[in-house]
Image 1 (cartoon, rainbow, N blue to C red):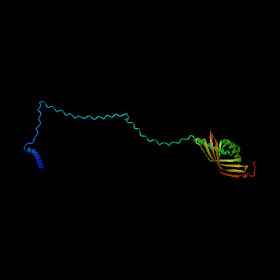
Image 2: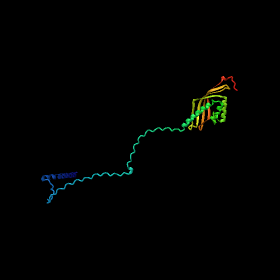
Image 3: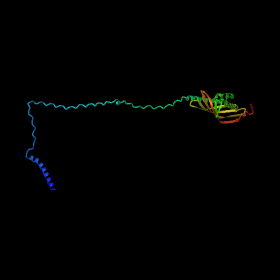
Image 4: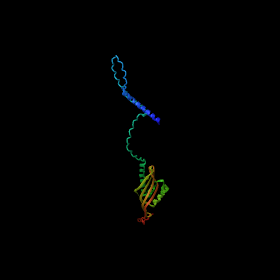
Length: 248
């Protein structure tokens, strides 16, 4: 511990001595001044005027940037003009059916044919039977049974003999006709009023019936290929006005 104190005291004394040395010198003499630099010898040549100062170099103007070459694929393409709103789409028109006119004509022909058929049964027996071959096909579906022309003729003959006086009146507002797409086959539904009488038997029948005919067009000629009829209402009575008359 004593050695430590002695070392510390010495260092303190040394520091104080170094600090007081310059101060003592300043008190005893003038301050130190550096000597002037040596002046150059005088020249016999007249003094030359001083060269004008050179202008400061002007920096070169900035060079324009060299454009980077553009490949053809990078060449700007012309912009496509914006699509203008199109006019509203027109609703598609239904395709005209080329067979529509044909079906309409065939339907009208089938209706007229059915009217002629019913009216033919108002004729006398011989005329009504002769018309059978003109109205029917060689084979007919008659009330659900397929029959030949000869068998059909025989049935019609028995009917006219039973009811020799007949009056058939088709209702024009009660006839409807439909045809297949090609207009070759038409179905006719007809409502008719009728009166049939037999003076010999003193009988009379009247009422309303419904007739269905299927008509097939062979070329432009219609023929009946199927027939079915139904009584909607019927009234039978004895013809009293002819009682007492004799029919041979």
